[in-house]
Each structure stands twice: as C-alpha cells, then as structure tokens.
Image (cartoon, rainbow, N blue to C red; front, side):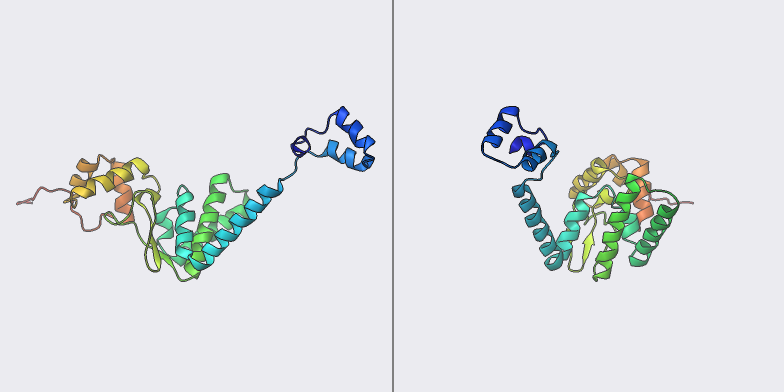
Length: 214
C-alpha cells in the first residue's frame, strides 16, 4: 500500500501473488500507474482543521484575524490597513487592476490576500488601530473589544529586532524625546522615520535640550 501510495508501484513477485489471488488486471495496472495518493488520515486531519478554523472565524473573529495576521505579518502593513476600510479597498482595487495588465508576483499576491481579509474584517464591523509606541507588542497583535492593535513590527521596514528593542526600553519609563528614544533603543534613523510617518511619535519633541534663545 505504501509503495503504491508513493508512486513506487508493486514488485513482480507481488504481481504474481495478485494474479494467484485472481485480482483483476485493471487493478494491478492501476497500482503501477498511480503516482500519489492522499492518505485518508491526512485528509481527515485537514477537514478537522478546516472546521476548527471556520468555527473560530465565526465565533471568535478578532482572535482569528489576530492569529492570521500574526502568521502573515510579513505582508501585513499597519501603515496601509490602519487607514480604514475605504483606503484598504482602494489598495485592493489597484492590485486587481494591475493584475489585469500583468501577472502579480508572489509578494503582490500575498499582499492582496491580506488586504482582502482586512477588508472582510472591516465589513464585519471591526477595525485596525494605529501602532502605539507604548501599547503595541513587538510582534503580536493585541485584541481589543472591537479592534486589533497591530505590533510594532507590522510597520513595513521596522523589523523584529528594532521592535523588540523598543518594547524592552519602554519598561524603564516613557521616552522623553525622539533623541531619547533612539539613544535607549539603538534603532536607526530609518526606523525613526517609519514611526514618525505612521504618527507613533506625534507630540514627542526632537530633543531633551531646552532652547532658551532662538
């Protein structure tokens, strides 16, 4: 059975035994032609997993979206998805239009799937918040009553190392300025600009130094 399932066919001596047992020739020929068979136990496991996922999506929607987006974090861009349903819809439309002119590459396809799921989340009455410098986790989504708080690493270009350093540094207290943030975390100027563009640094001064004279 295992040899047939894996496309290895059956040995001559086994064929002889099948002939002795008056097994039909079509059955023997099929065993020699089969390239791959999906195990029933494996198929059953897939169906059970699909049922669990569907149940979670219906009854625990935010937990489902949080888990899915965490797994697909590389394609999840909080800068895009936190802007709301309308903006997400516009990005989906752009990718779909682009696909009519030229086949999307693997990254674009993966991004489209994530955007479509985010669109579905908005349609179900949930939303995505903006990354918060003090409340967001480094790499995990935080579930609120009717929204998801994305991780710092979900900002395109941040990376897990920079995100972890921010989470560790904030345990020692608030960041008194952008200069203080960079000094305590060691993140790059590029990371600072990503956070600034997202709005995560709004209200934070550039430096701790107080200018007495302009």
